[in-house]
Image 1 (cartoon, rainbow, N blue to C red):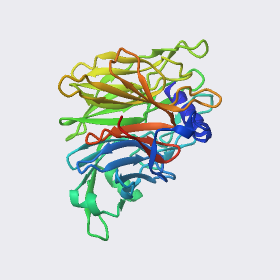
Image 2 (image 1 turned 120 degrees about the vertical axis):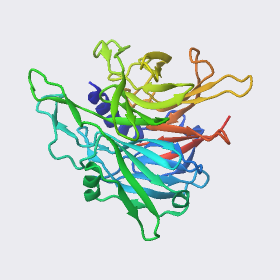
Image 3 (image 1 turned 180 degrees about the horizontal axis):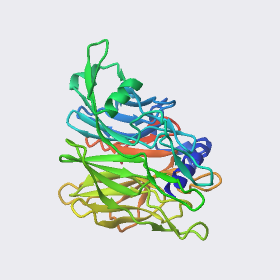
Length: 391
């Protein structure tokens, strides 16, 4: 099951964070900022600041931060976002970001929408999650002036309830800055998944990434293996694609594993979707697929990967070919100790990659500064953003 896959990632990543990475003494990265609360996704704002989704460190303590990409200075944009203790024992909160103009779209992950069931691998509905808007997408509108100077805003639990009721929440701080927050989509926290031994078993949802295309959002659900299309204006939701299982490449574990879509980006008229794969995370089981925006048809694009967690396509200039960067959470997630994360570059999606960095610790997301070519990478369990200089 996907939840088992995510549970293993969550539990082993802590070990990975403590283990020395291979070649760490020569690791070609530069720390930009530390002390973040579980950085899960990065995007650039219209003002070339880094916006960071942080899952949080306590109930309903999810956060979006503004980070200066040159100095590493951090400020809070919005705190108090939904976050709950997942069935794996870690915090699940803000999980994905996308920007269009002065609107920021934030996915909220599974949180504590389900509880550990009575049998191994089972899940039960949580009648009282810590927030009524886990497994959702929020729209945050803020001005360029707010982005430049704000000291931050905080949502209250009562405002979570207001958002769940369809109200737009307007926040004002002591500096008289103003932002608005609106619930765009509220996904079901789970779907029924009865088992002979647990008739009321469920399977949780887990919105994990979002991309904006025109008037729609495309949301990757890492638990339900779906790409959902959400109308920004109405919140109407349809399933664009359901991703099939992938072959297990190792001689133990199930013959097939779940796709676990964990990031989604628009490129060349299609969606590029990274698929982490599930236990036992065999080498070559993970991949990047292209998803047709009209039909939802899935086509393998970059295969033979291990725990792919983000992809970045760079369009070639003039006669230069496109390039593709792939971020892997771990080169061997079930190793003892787990293998480090890696950054790969492909000049040809069907070719062999160049390994640019192989000393990352629990990387989850990356963005590239088009002005410099530098790549910024979030490391969730170290609470850092590190920089890989252009080469």
